[in-house]
Length: 229
Image (cartoon, rainbow, N blue to C red; front, top):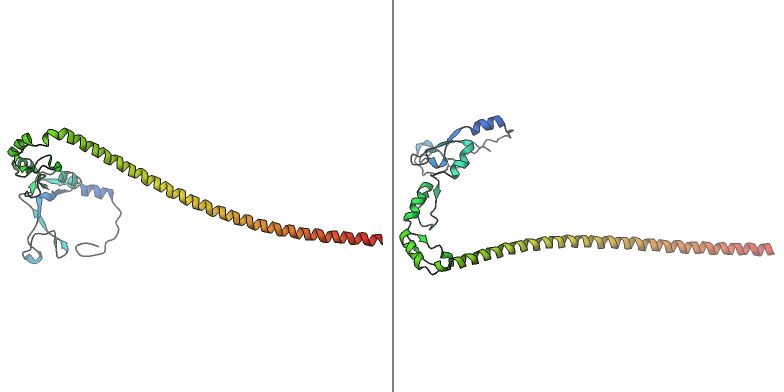
């Protein structure tokens, strides 16, 4: 359904020519737009992407990205846009930043962590104290050993993951073999049943043959007796 008037939409065959024309249309980068604060009817409303369940109205943000781009290059541009919001990698407590301001912020950030924080170092400071800290950090002298340990641990994780995959594969093969074995057992049971049935039938035929032979012998004996008389 249409998100605006809820009208039922019909399936439309993709028109390559029209799609190419649409792709050539120029649009504003999404980091150069902002939601308006005016709702339907002119009443004030908080900026939002939807109003009463309908798509909100956007306007050009004079402080945002000034570029207009082709629709086909939208994702590529917005992935590397200088106005794309990012978070400080040092600490989530830092205010939101634009990509173009991140490098300058990192030089002044007061929440720089020691690169050995994952090993237990609790240092947090700015760029100046960071460089001073590295000179006395007890983990700095062990960084090569720690890195080698991390590399070995990573290799062990990869090996374990590979072993887990091998075990899963073997279990799968074992399951298939079990299914085949069950099927063979069922087939063997069916063949034994057929063999028993054939053996019983053969025994009955043999007994009937013996009865017929016995009756034939009696008949022959009776004829001999009659001829002898």
